[in-house]
Image 1: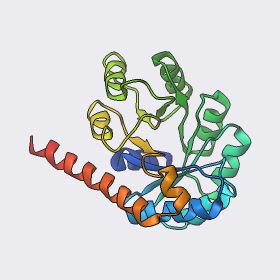
Image 2: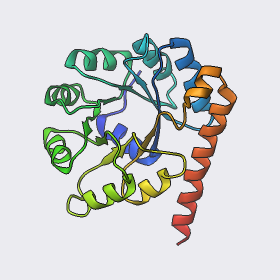
Image 3: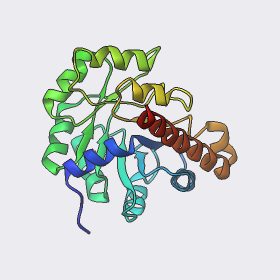
Length: 220
């Protein structure tokens, strides 16, 4: 299978704008919940490496060429290499580790390290990060993104924590390159009950809200 280039992956992430991120202690639950998210319209999917057999899940979903599959909670260069071998096309971390960034650059995949301050974001960008994950959440994510991009418009900010179904459009309009959904999509109660139709409905609602926002923005 021919892999997309790093630039093609980055462009796709920008175009899709929304990512589904699953974190659970149950491999089967992760699989079924992510399938529900895909059925609801998500095409960028991320399996955190804290999930059992995450590499196998990455490989399984990477077989679907319609999906852009990534690995989350990547903490070491070794994990980065294993994830890419499994089929991950982007690597996400809650921290900014220059070695992980360098490994991703060497492997030709997109890397999204975790950052909290404008200084950390700029350092990650200079180290070769394609995007910067905003983590943890600020009190008002949209206002924070807007404030940072004022003097630092070259940053590609990708918030995950603090993103909700109700605020994600505002965050995108504030200038975020994309947003990731964890608990607002994979609600703990729905996951506990294995209510996959409800997860699919949430995914569909998020996707429809994004499409409406795009249509409204084009109409202005």
